Image 1: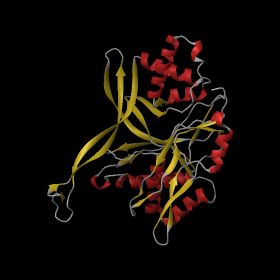
Image 2 (image 1 turned 120 degrees about the vertical axis):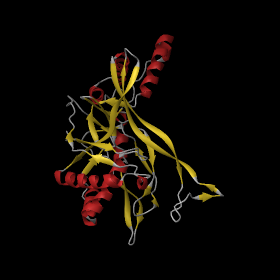
Image 3 (image 1 turned 90 degrees about the vertical axis):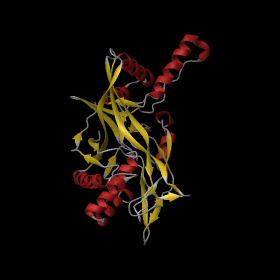
Image 4 (image 1 turned 180 degrees about the horizontal axis):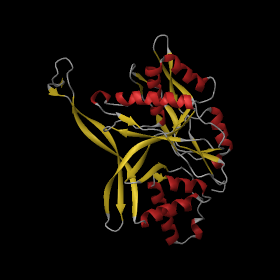
Amino acid sequence: MTTLKVIRLRPEGAFRTDLRSDTLWGLICWGIRAVYGNERLEAFLRAYTQDKQPPLLLSSAFPYVQDGEQLEYFLPNPLFLPQAAASRQSRSLEERKAEATGRKKLKKLKWLTKPQFERLLAADDKRRALLQIVQEMESADSTLSVRILSEERVHIGVNRLTGGTKMESDAGLVFHAEEKYVIGQKRRKQDKKRTAAGSRPVFLYHAEPETEAMMLGALRFMSHIGLGGNRSIGKGKFTVQQPEPFKLQPLAQTNVQVSVSLCSPTEEDIRHMQAHAALTAYELESRQGKASFLYNMNKQEVLCLKEGSILPSISNIYGQLKIVGSVGTPPHPVYHYGFALGIPAYFSEKT
């Protein structure tokens, strides 16, 4: 099993840009270029594109909750397909109602705690395991939960020459910008109250020691500059904490992997998934953005498999660096990171 580590990020305030795997990887690349030079960055990229040996695989950022001494990591709910229901003609109205209620509850379940995630990876009947998890959460005396809170903030455009308000049509330029926070809550069943609990983002990764040291140096440099929109007004700054091992319970049998990152599959990956359709489950998401910092270029759209997708076999490394444009003179390709960081799991073909 791949050795995984976890890095906790401590935001210094609100942020605008979600820390998905492609965004995190791009942030690290800019940091490598700034701290270690362009030659080190080029060698880092060649390991992906020519050597076909990804030196760094990382996940999207997920939340964790710290409540006193209790630390709980949250991971995306894997997209296992629910087991096929029996024919509706042979079921009573009450059974069909109960099934519909169960489907609604499962649809709302976005995050699983690390123990719940491990339990689901090993379960034969994924739907039953998920329903049991939901029932246990509903009946527990206290539970920790997490969500990403978005708020609209009012901003005023500033004229950089005069220092006054930027004017359009004889009126001040007022606009709204979305800001996000990670919110942790603890619910106590007996008093039906929710209290705040400390919550921050984390991400998982696998890297060789030399690459890990370079990644940490790049991240710590970029933590002072900020990530995503509104960096110039202090948004997106964070503190990088020391890496820690991330251990998962070993499974008796495995035949698939759960991707905890966005994945842009190659044509060979797609053929392999089609050949093992019974062991494959995913949702698609379109990713598109800009090459920021030194350039302002719109990148081409990339269709990705979302976090939680189920990919057949645990030995395959799915994904690719995809060229989404070029910048500079002479032109240099701009890459989109689309490798999957897979966690071994078991998925019954009868599901």
